[in-house]
Image 1 (cartoon, rainbow, N blue to C red):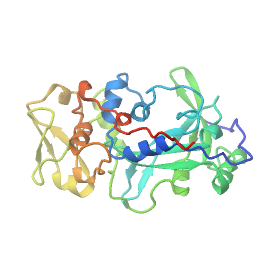
Image 2: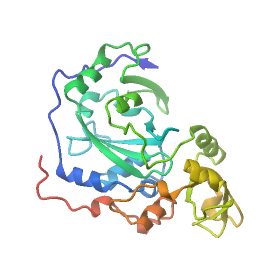
Image 3: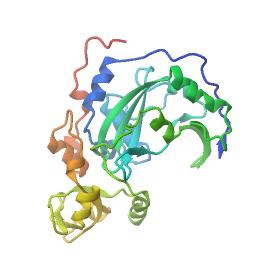
Image 4: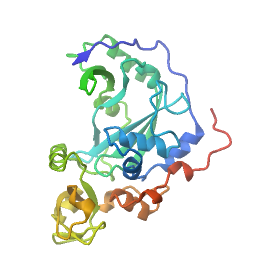
Length: 309
């Protein structure tokens, strides 16, 4: 159910808030697989676990419920899951900004949008955004828009949760594309995503996400499983044509492999990592990182003496 916005838009541009340290971290985040941190640190799962993993990689607490921007109270961090459409252009779902009690305009004043592939959960890139100029004026039109018929870019929607109705602010996916935050032309990284297949395979395995395996053969129907001594039966021709294909795990079946569905992907579509090694990227995508081998991006990026605030 959509509701009228509760917080009026600001009359002035948001002041520019930047941090050189965060800029370095954002550049270094390309190619970071978020799955290992989400698995080991957020054992309870949940929809926001990969966003929590991103915060942890950037040096923050994984869990932060404060009603202020995430980075030093100055810059909001938003993880955007993206996938390729048939034409190669990236697409995404709408983005939750905050709960109804929090001012969404303050959250959107200065934002670091980080884009991660929906299938592999690997960071593809980032964009900094400031609520200013024509962009602020366009988004402010949501205040006077009809929440049902005008398709506002910023909306307040109430969903049924564990504790009853939970109103929250959301940004429309089309706003991200219209503002040029998502790449407009075909991109060379990322994968197609089949939401119907994803929901079906999770339902068949008690809500667990399927395991991702990188193709280790170029033709035929079988590729080796990196987690056990079994193999995965899949359509390798489709893997290299579309980037991925569902897979069936043959016997023998490792303990972890028996609890999950499976998908095989083309490793050539992964981004070149800025900080991680190829081996670390591949292990992270394939859920082969034990807890004692978990590494953190913030430990690899030196903090500059001057943050240039």
